[in-house]
Image 1 (cartoon, helix red, strand yellow):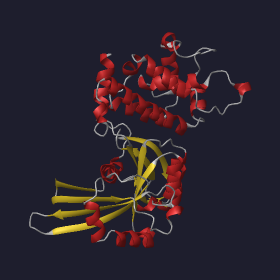
Image 2 (cartoon, one colour; image 1 turned 90 degrees about the vertical axis):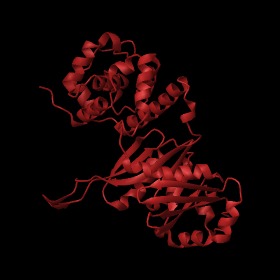
Image 3 (tube, helix red, strand yellow; image 1 turned 120 degrees about the horizontal axis):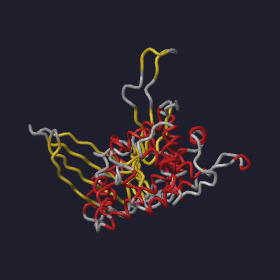
Image 4 (spheres, helix red, strand yellow; image 1 turned 180 degrees about the vertical axis):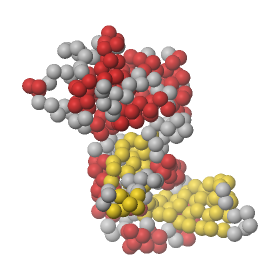
Length: 371
């Protein structure tokens, strides 16, 4: 009896929970060819003299088998044999269908993070194409918001392990607010490891056309450089970990400065919203006046400073106020700044293909079935 793979089982459940089936993909010939193209680009660790089955073919078989509810290596082999005629429309299969051991060994050793990244990127491009074909271009923004933040998995820590207390599992998430999908994840040990982990992930991502947001921990010169090297923009929260920098920006946004920005087009915006606990009044300010900052050149791409002043008016008339500051590579565009500052909190509900967090998915699948 074939051994089960917890990774395959988890991926299978993900597809099932979101009603993604082989039928919904099988009818889209162009999508299959694009997936195959990216599967072929995954680096092959095997020595050419020992290669019998093509890596791209193996990856595609596993991909479709999981869509077909297979969660064991033997089930993947059975699926491929049953679907061999259809698979040969897209795959070469020079030596026929690989065995279950081949899938287990090969998939266990390839760079799965690489395949994950390119597959997610392909999915996002495909989503855009489908929505455009459906005449729904209005859902797009000029730049997408990508948020970086660490998250502790609740319940993963234990007081009494074999070697003492077991710390809770922490992951670093790179999350697309527009698609409500996790673009990349990395497990981290201590919270202090989040900074280099974030920079490592960002350096291998194509960030063109995106604004990357991050909390104060990741407001680092290296993080800003990694984002700019990936052709992205950033809006990074500034707090006490950059104490002197924070104090200087706080002093800069005095009452006189704020009044001037309120009168300047594209630099000020006010929103009033009902929230649990009262009425939230937010004032957004952004300015490209950064020349006064002595370390400007050390922050790659630094183009503007942003401020958000939030006031909560409670039903009893009492108020709570706070101000937050940001360093940015974007221009004086207060709408863009507001989207970035507000959008960052979407990463707190990170999930990969949660139907409630990915509202576009049902209409996309309906559209696919209709074509």
